[in-house]
Image (tube, rainbow over all chains, first blue to last red; front, top):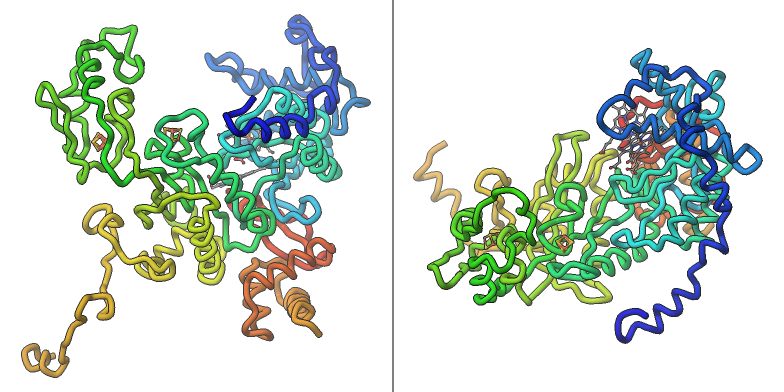
Length: 478
Length: 85
Ligand code: HEM
Ligand code: HEM
Ligand code: SF4
Ligand code: SF4
């Protein structure tokens, strides 16, 4: 198995990979241990009549899901669980109470972690411990997802068993940063969870707090023809390279990398990461004119056939492609499609719509944008294009060296709880470019006036300039 | 004393004498630099991480940011008004 030339690697990983049967905690009978009738008649320990109303709506309800889990745990019995069997009952109970009072009973933060790690576990405690002892702790454990979130079912089943046995059984796949999240554990189970995850599942804990957060990436070359670099490999390599930054917090605030293989941005790196890597190309969009004709003739369904089943009408290349090109750089003369590539801003629309006719260019690499974030101090912000193009070659020295420069600078310059985008805004993009050692470039300007002015220094202008302030004053008195 | 021990001592001085029992890494770095002006972020981090592993220091996190403190000094479970993330 495996790609040609990689059979050996694959075989080795197969051998090292533990089978579910080797690590499973529960039997099949235990995993399917209640009937629909039992569920219908099941009542949790507390009165939850208010939140039960949420089940009457048209959507699947978290209340129903958690009730199932509560019943499942009751039937597993406390002897088979390290965390209170009634944890889900108390969870629903506290939600009911919060609905009544309009107030939360979760405290924010605390000291928990596993030895040697400064992140990845978010301590949550409840302030109603007398009434709801089973959720006195409800810690969140972030688990570093594999690149592009590829799993085997064996692996997922092993993960679920651990979450059931040493957590509340509730999980979050995936958290917004990308991690797999185990919800609702107690402090004494954290080291055992860490042991099980690392020994049985071969995964590590993710990031939280003032450190590098778990990097994440799009599916990239594994399945997508648009990928301009191997997102999965770069994500993995960067995760391994910056382990210390992931596990030992020393940053002013959180820092996220995300890797998108092309400007479609399936990982939304441009909006969700302090440092976004987006695949791009330098040369021209590849055009297969014959395939364009087939699209026009309706022989190949446009957008992969997504517009079917309703009267969308016949495909009209003029109104659906040419007129929608945001930079108006495309032309169709009835026979030939042409693109003024210098004006193309890689919006991906034409390529997405007609993938058999158009392809990303061959001279591929990535762009790097800095500074996206959710509103914390300043408002929400998208990433700002800082490095228009960089080649991507294993072992990724240029990417790694750049990151080191960024971290060294930000640790010194960033203020507490300031995201790097805010630091850059404070000191100016120009200063940041100087730190990175890159000249200002037209590509960095999103539109006139939305970027700060760049003042050139004399040394940066060929020939410099010669200005005599006294001569100037003779013409322009104070 | 070796460099690491100097830094360790500077951290302990900062952590035990300051008004705050919990502080950001950056504040600790500034504190260390008062006695060791050329102390770099990475070496201070290395020593601080070792002290966390030895349970001399501990980390308090809201999920969004992280604070250091001497183990046993100040409260250990804090209800902060801090917005997480
Ligand atoms: C009871 C109903 C709950 C619902 C419906 C719910 C729903 C959600 C949703 C929709 C997300 C965002 C998922 C995403 O990132 O796309 C989320 C994230 C999260 N939830 Fe919950 N949640 C519930 C209870 C809890 C409880 C009780 C806790 C802990 C005390 C918790 C801890 C978290 C954490 C830590 C995350 C963020 C994970 C991350 O992004 O890394 N949740 N939850
Ligand atoms: C007034 C109450 C609260 C406010 C204003 C608040 C605000 C926030 C904000 C702004 C974020 C960051 C979102 C982002 O960056 O995308 C966040 C994240 C989070 N909050 Fe809260 N929060 C509150 C209460 C709580 C409570 C009661 C809990 C748990 C018991 C909680 C748990 C979390 C967690 C686990 C995260 C995610 C942390 C991470 O992703 O690193 N928050 N909160
Ligand atoms: S971001 Fe681009 S390369 Fe990555 S999966 Fe999406 S379309 Fe494919
Ligand atoms: S990718 Fe977007 S900008 Fe470029 S030619 Fe196609 S539609 Fe126009």
